[in-house]
Image (cartoon, rainbow, N blue to C red; front, side, top):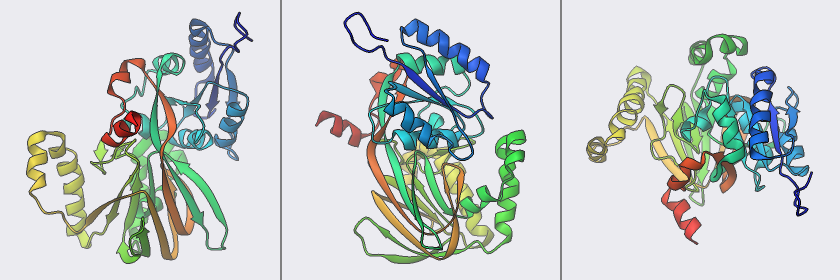
Length: 344
């Protein structure tokens, strides 16, 4: 289809997880929005266990889609973002499932599907950072992936690997309780060497290392209080509790200091005068390499990626465009780094 002047009529694509999406309802909303926008018929791509969205997003871009909507949970969104990374085609978030972490961090609608669909056709684009990882397995094989929220090695990844997916479908994030218990039963200390940017490599013993592009987790838990989606750096935290007191310090730090005090100017001033606890070590950088003594579980945006012996994570500054409501355009970009890049 083309306009009167010969310009091709834009069309959208939907990459959807049939397990998590009410397809009939979604198609009705999409058809209504595309008609109102004057776009050509939307093209639909169903995910599968073998390909949860990356290949479908690749095909949509190759066929000329103007926007690719990701309809599903965090895994679908991560996979579609991987397929779109580096292109100028934006992702439209149609969140469903348990976490919806990227939508939460961007403060987008979580339960108004029709509004989210309309935004895909009428919104504006926000450029955010994209994390990329190269994973090395115990057999020497390597594979590459992308993530938009957080990558983790250690007890958090073991928790996800130990969580029953069927239980997660029924009770949501509460299913992780069983995964936490199973992870804590075993030896959960990880010995590794890490190198951040061009600094000297160091050895460390931790329970988890989390590499974040965003800071907010399920349950409104603010793990990485300084993380920004478009500042061009990772926010990294190493968890190093020493017994029950160490875990109590972590909970106090995350739930009270990050979750309550950092949300007010007075609280931030008070925290600026307090000493950091050794159970959490915060770092920032554009690239981090981790190498473990023994194979360890690894996760991306809440998806278990199996065991790894080494990880190289790099940030791709503003490597992904996200379609957001036009009413949010006046707050873009969010970070000082992104404002400088936009001005340049």
